[in-house]
Image 1 (cartoon, rainbow, N blue to C red):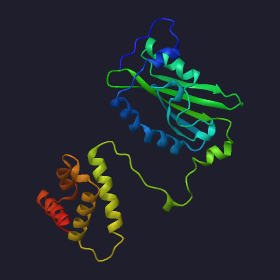
Image 2: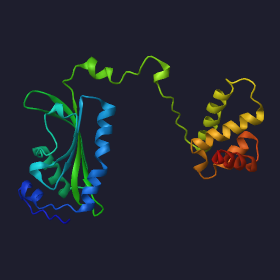
Image 3: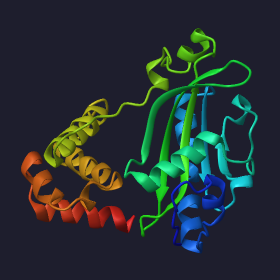
Length: 232
């Protein structure tokens, strides 16, 4: 896809000259779950739109929370979208935001627009995120309020190094095993190795050496338990 912009050329004419390849469409297709994921985490007040530059009259390729503006897949590009495309030919700025916009019916959005390029650095689409600031504040905040019960909350650690990840994993598994009674040290080690293997820890390069050192067992023992687990 090659696009050449001449000075003062109409943005619509430039957009009409864009021809996406199959690979370009694949890139946009891959981004569809990103649209849904962003909308999921920010809630029903966040509209997320993936545009394709192939057809300005039907540019919306994917949309989440479409109730906010009433647009749907196949809706046309906006005037701001055209401005972002034109700016991409003049600068290397691919992110426009954050900025505020107002709709005809009075809604105020805080928005960001991200240009999407292919492997040849040509623009093929854009990702737009609009947060509706006119939404009821309590309703908006409630989507970011965690549940009151610990059982409904997922515990996640954020290690900065592999040994830290492994140590935290071992400690968590050991905590669960220690709740059982009558478990011998040998059986504890076996259960720890089993669980680490199920979690994919041993797929990390060098993990066997680190686990052996932290648990005070031999690498032979670890490999033995891993083979034992796979044989089950």
